Image (tube, rainbow, N blue to C red; front, side):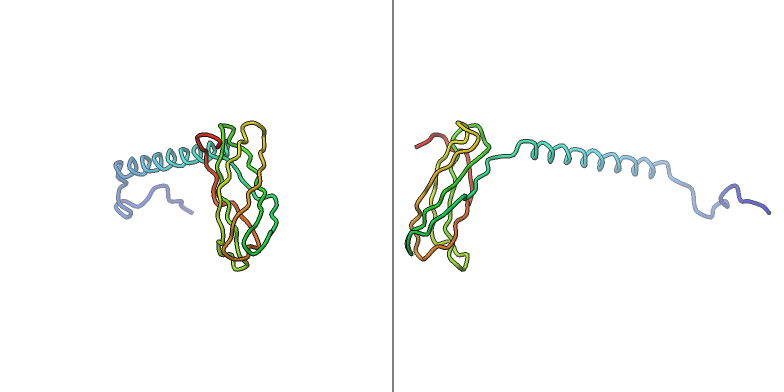
Length: 135
């Protein structure tokens, strides 16, 4: 029994050295891009930003809700958070801003009373951002 040791001549065509270089270059560029993305994602996860959360709320009336907000992280100074009151249909019925300073302690907590246009049944944090100074 004979074994084939080489490809039949002219059957598959000749490999182009240029094609191989392009393939290697494309693979290298994709590898570098992937490693850059991994580094960017790791650095973003290593330094999480400010985190705000509603720790409690009390529905005072059809026109008001009292919300307790806690902020952690940041460490660079005061943080302003937007607090939203939600109706039973998850519609925003009241909005207010609160400024807390988690740099003094690991976690800062505060209360805000929101006026609402309809009865609120829940409250959420809209967004938290650094502010220049505490009012």
